[in-house]
Image (cartoon, rainbow, N blue to C red; front, side):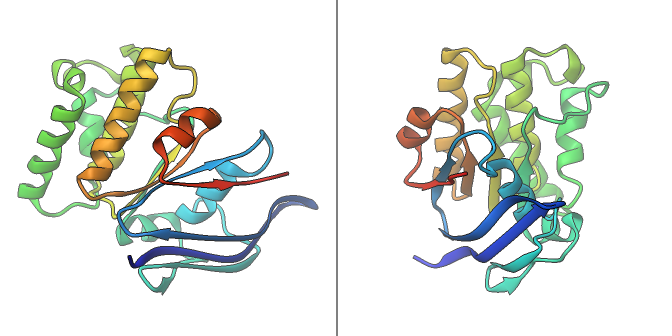
Length: 212
């Protein structure tokens, strides 16, 4: 398989505190990989560095063979990387439908927009039922579904999922990870960070361990 994403000797610091040290990571096209490790190991920071929300202090990141380290987040998003952050970061006063439309801001093809919307409503039928409802009134599980759906509306080549099971009941976790598998089968490469190591090892094809 071809490599979609490559990180080489990535370092990142907060002041003098080390967040990431000599990280080497390769993600193959159409893979479903998981990153696990203890709190404070830098798992969420890793995704933020990949998506451009934070810039690495040293090292190289290539996406589809092109250097992206140093690019702003909106430029990386346009290249095909969607980041679904921890704790969802939705537009809580906007409707489900408006949140999904916001996710598609980089998408110019209206036909593709409707194809992606149909796919999301198939994977998460509850979102279709609540498409006019304000995001802030949804349950935690529904908000996580919406956060993932909004990321998919960008039609990404690579989906970054940060702690998708955080705070959810076991049955809802199962539904979320069923959806993650469906998204992978549809052809979207996925890299997820997960605190629940058992769950991550169950769903991930390759497991990457970050240590403090």
